Length: 241
Length: 238
Image 1 (spheres, each protein chain N blue to C red):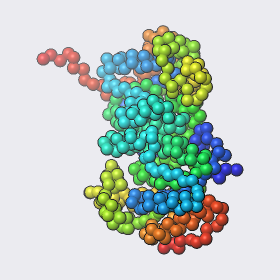
Image 2 (tube, helix red, strand yellow):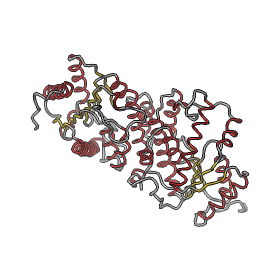
Image 3 (tube, chains in turn brown, orange):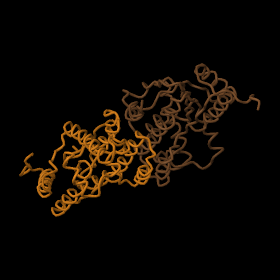
Image 4 (cartoon, rainbow over the protein chains, first blue to last red):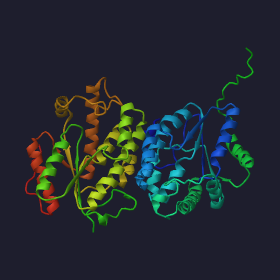
């Protein structure tokens, strides 16, 4: 099955991957701690002998240059912002995610279609158009949303990294002339959209205010039932030479 | 009441009431003579005093470089390529076409979403999906499809530099070499353009007629549209 064929789905959410691999994704606003949790999960899975593939947003090389240019020159509109990210995502699905799932890998994605569903809709793109755009995407075996109160996420982000970028602050929306204020307003709107997505797509909610190690335990507990039937890599450590 | 409509939900933040120009599209497959006719039509309209602007595929500031690189190395997934073209088109729609229409220009567009949809469908994209992707586009005021059969297209392409890798669909080879692939690929593209044209009501022109005949017809039709009177002459269909 090709990615183009996957797009014949009536809507996003119906492409259950028939392949032996597993797709596990995390979602949440910046500062929700999702990336930390996914990194810890990857380490654990690797130590258990599973073949782990890590897939990040904005990582397709050729598209990345265009995205960077668009951002640097601030010529992206809500529409082109949405389309360029869908292009990047599609490239990753075609060349990384689907082949890895076919090969039996455990694919971990830091952000998935739900990021676009939240962000592009806040930017003014029609929700049904954005959902249709991503029809080719396969449904993850597990989708975990790291629910964080706005103040907590803001504290984590704003204390550690003072330089906020134009688009990540939603400055293109003209919500506020001050970058930090704009960032807060933008993130709060994204948070509202995420809550709708939790309902619509049945995302697994993680309380991201819990201690890191507790969240990791809960995350592993969520993922473990998906794993047993996986093909494992042979352990070679004990082989004597 | 605007003279424009969207195909679907449209471009976020754009009001149709602000668009006072005209959007005229010349469609047709590779090598059919679109550029010649766009240039001739432009000269005609400018003589009549209209302000004319032009745009064509892969001419966006945002994505043209990336598209060129992707084509050189063929390093982008097929579906991603389709979306990259959509990004390029959206950028041109928002940064070239819509501003020109706001300023009251006659926007002559050398191919529109239809060619892009056709090339995507031929490469396996789901027709309904790609139509929805492009549903942010404006409905043009007129679409002229310069239509040709593949056997008539071949000598033109031979005379102007031979069979291009992409125009032959060699990224999804449909034959043993450029020529064979070209025949099948272009046949499929024309078929998809026909399907779209039939459904969306393109004005289909027999592109094997002489340049002057076609040009006179285009001038007449577009002038009639712009002035709000009926066309004086019609090109007999072959």
